[in-house]
Length: 467
Image 1 (cartoon, rainbow, N blue to C red):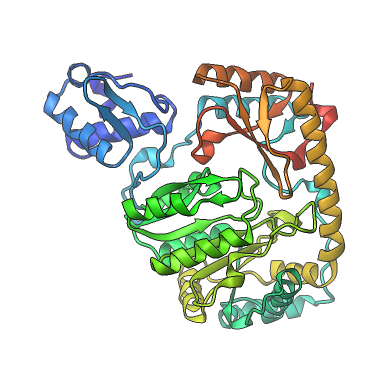
Image 2 (cartoon, rainbow, N blue to C red):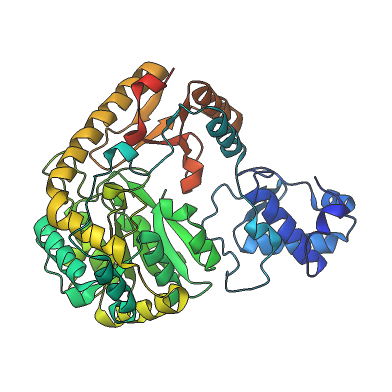
């Protein structure tokens, strides 16, 4: 594991090679959260380098939050990677390990099971099940009309006007929000929206606040942009004002990225009171908010607080991200961003330089869905997901015999659970047992959480597939 030959694959000075080696071992799961590294003297001897070089590398990784050094105890892998600044992807000479598949030991076993067993209960899959995708029909549009639309795509950088009109009507019906279509940018989904924001509104080294845990934590685009992520402690309503204030006091937070409605992975719903308090605090601190709303139309009860933070935004402080991927499937990649016209025009120009705009066909399908399908289909989707959530809870109670803690989902896709484990080995044994029973899950560590947390995506729960 530690020898002079392992440094040959890297470039740069010796201390940089050591830092890259340690980062690679963490990314590949060779070094796990909380693990103690060999002593400075031992590392220097095994790598065949001076001790001062090792000290330099360890100090650099400690400053970046990758490692924790405890006097008299040793150097450990930080159990949470919050605050780690990765290298920017705007660099043609990325280290080779950036391109390698970064999978934990459990993820490697999951890949093997998926390849060997065609019939499994994949509760790690957060996408809409194929049998719940609506059967959309294209509007009465000729091929010539589609070709003309594509030819005029440069003039449609912000998206198809007729689709933007449908989105404005959708926001009015869902949340009683009035949205000017000039504030809407059509995107190919939330991932593209986030990428454009990181490229157009942020720069490497900027500090960003996100919920802890959060699916934002697992997105490579944040690491690729060289951003520093800071997790903000949550309760059952999302981030607390106290934890947000503490984070802002310690770090120069520039933007806050939130998923306040049926949050991924926890499933919590932020109350309207909390939303307004967070908005007011961020305004006082000149912090922008990026709000991802992927699940708000999937509430199991009619009295939940599903209105977005954007509804109370009076000062162009919130960028709202909407998407249809959880309703019509990920293959029709259509989402939208609501922001001041100057912002979306600049981000559209960045997009135009990167991929020459959007295709017309998925926009027409999204328009058709919002115009003719969404009311009936989303009602059916809520009913099916509610039933699957109840079936999953019954199975969990039976399988774990009470040794599991969770809150009943109120909507969305996910159930987040806490297990009675104290070590990595105990958690892995439990996960392996689930695999033997044909069940795949997502570890809380994938979202920046602690040991013993698991996300179940109940849309894919099939009682007949579990053993």
